[in-house]
Image (cartoon, rainbow, N blue to C red; front, side, top):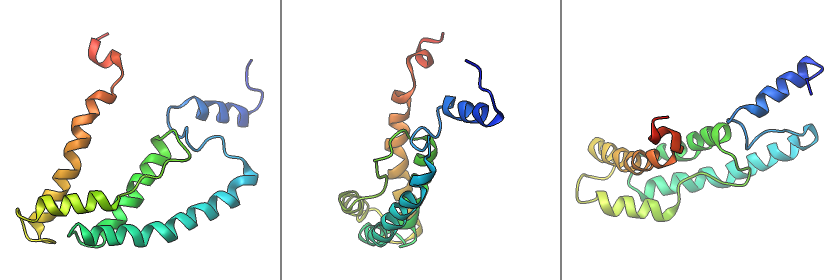
Amino acid sequence: MMPNTERDRWRGSLQALPVLRGVLPVERARVPAEALAGLTLAAVGIPEVLGYAKIAGMPVVTGLYTMLLPMAVFAVLGSSRHLIVAADSATAAILAAALTGLAAAGSERYVKLAGLAALLPGSASWPTSCPAPCWSGS
């Protein structure tokens, strides 16, 4: 069945993309409730991640990055409407314990080591997320 209108074609092409699966379809009537849910999550989550950054020995502003950037990326690439992507207290405490002997908390070296500690697990797990055709060469 072919779409009849430009709007139907646009909607069909968006739903065919592997991105925005967690967002689409958007019901117009639900937008105010979804916006309120987002504001509520921000009101609770922002002070929380600021505290976790402090626990980890990082500059406090990095707490915002641990919440806002992953959420923005997950909103586009993720497929779940119910998953919350942010830092947690256990990760902050483990990071602080691991890096305390290597550099002074909050120093430039400490921040670089924390960034490396964050990137290593993601880069190590990235190849396993590739579908089978990536590995088979076909």
